[in-house]
Length: 118
Image (cartoon, rainbow, N blue to C red; front, side):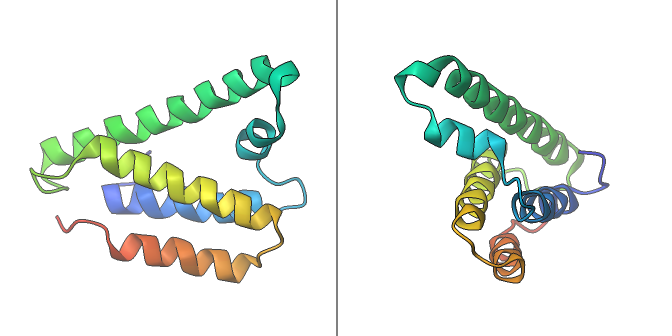
């Protein structure tokens, strides 16, 4: 969230997702929620809240970027945040399935190609 531009925040977020999920431990925030059934509903709910909190942090940072002119006035901070979180979650699922780090980095890079211009 400390990066100077919204695009750099998005890049750091996705690059971090690739790095974190291609470690042997994977991503607890996604994998734990996927694996939890009814007995694990408390854990699933806590992980969902954690993901929602991070989506809100991204949204707030992107609102700031709109206010500062770093993102165009018609940019949708909520949608941008949800988009990044969805891509990051997909990266986590693919990493758990064994997709290589380089391949996932290409996905992150491709997602940034659709980033709105300033």
